[in-house]
Image (cartoon, rainbow, N blue to C red):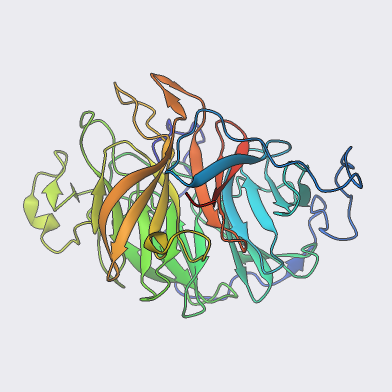
Length: 391
């Protein structure tokens, strides 16, 4: 992603491991707090006083006519990153910097969240499978067993650390677990084949398989609801100027290479690797976007509360640039999807960037069971809710 390089020391890098069963011994983490039977969130002052007041509108943020954006949560969600709705209809959120997973009730906006798990190492990816909650930490993937999530099992140990630390995860239509592992650097040849790649596992962590490579930092993953193809957002390299290289949306094919570090865009060689022959067998992006926008989380709109034209389209959060001379990004965009392919893009929610000052940094959208679109903001420490009221 387009965040300043981490200061964490690089970890030893190993070749791609032969498929094996991950450590299966379950452990109870002392700092894991039960969703039920654990400490309850602080009581709401207005509880029991009738229906809650509507949440406040998000000032300064523009959305299309007929839509409304409001502040859903601004207590206890500092540094909020990934959002994922669980089978219980509640919204789960990763507070990466705090090492915590919390959950919120869409029917109770403005209420303090409930802690699900604590003491984690940079949790980012969240995925549910057969009721259990899987969490992508920087160095591993764990499973928190349903229904109370108090029992943790390490599913995928020993992930490489340092550099890009977000471990996005998702379960595909095939029932397998997909893990995105970003690069250790801006541009380099990795010695661990799992870096700058998406790796696939069985739900128990066995059967490790390199699914796709050449992906510098695919911090967002979403499976197309009709084709089942895996789409990823791609944060491209720095230091080629304000407008190169373009950020990307890639539609992954098993075994394919998507260019990094040898080339960018439509097979354009990077200056560090001028031999264009390396790019000949790579896949060009399915869609290009403004350089340094830092696309992170993304979701296909599968609800029925938005107008028909929005259904099936892709929403992508632009976290925003950190080293561009003129800042860019800091918004939520809608990508029009036609016949399973991205064809056009437009701003959907914007206004966090005021001149050169960012009032917030969108990270991850999620579609709620109510059909609303929820959006995390780790710059403003908020979660927003976007609804359609008609015009």
